[in-house]
Length: 110
Length: 123
Image (cartoon, rainbow over all chains, first blue to last red; front, side):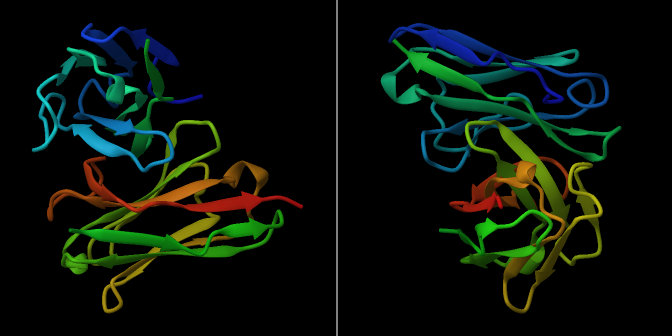
């Protein structure tokens, strides 16, 4: 059971906008930055969003992040087939004194 | 380009020990904190441990505390994970990950990951 809660799956058609949620608590998302990682099949995760809503250089602006209270969201607009991957949220948890991840969301592009 | 190469994985019996290594190159290893993150087959990511740039600060997940030890040799640009008392639930691909900022330690802001090494705990 992951400390951060994500839906196990999400889907959309090319060009659509999809949103993936990440729910936590006051000891993690409620007071700490949220990070998002994209993991293509058979590869290591790749940083997608840092500090809630910042994109590293090279990440398309189709990807955006937000945080409100104890929840965070990753939005992908103009969905493309190459976006089919697993998406993971992460944060530091002050109570656990450790990094916590969501269970991951598998995005399918139909 | 930063390179992180894990090694040391394999098949090990329950209760035995194993040491993983992560060879770092193309950046000043001694300036950055490093993490281990694992992923069981078909599952999500699970954080394991973190060590500060000079090795003076370490944190562990509750699931490995007392069994795993994270360490580093800055003269060899290598990160280690000594695993003992291995259990079936430790079966996973183990990744080392570099933190983004020199002053950063615990935040899960990882700009580079290794390719992972598979540890299988089975009798």
